[in-house]
Length: 145
Image 1 (cartoon, rainbow, N blue to C red):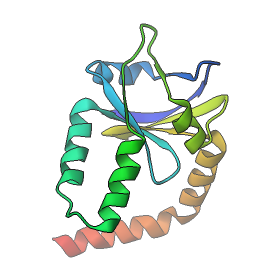
Image 2 (image 1 turned 90 degrees about the vertical axis):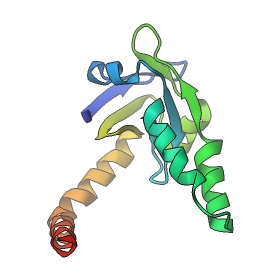
Image 3 (image 1 turned 180 degrees about the vertical axis):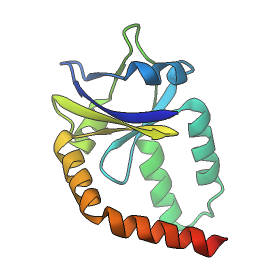
């Protein structure tokens, strides 16, 4: 499971260390891509295959073609270097607004890389609305039973 929040420096070649706790799950390789929240997602190869299976099953509508372009044009296969870093493509760093610092977030099945200011904004907004979000989720769960 990929869990937790970690802050790192990005080196001058765009390399980002990944938390040691995540590295075992990423030894098989990974796919990095942009996300609609203006962050970067990192999937294990097996998890990426599940994502692409869902995308491939979508009907060939205009919105789905746009979505496919978004998902696949920003996707790159990566491997950890010997020190546990990944080289994040500059186009993805620009997309997410990542400069010298990055926040790495474990999201159970994938990892997100965030610009620290954008992450702070996300967490502030979430903290202010968490009671509403929690109530909504609990209500949805009750309705599904």
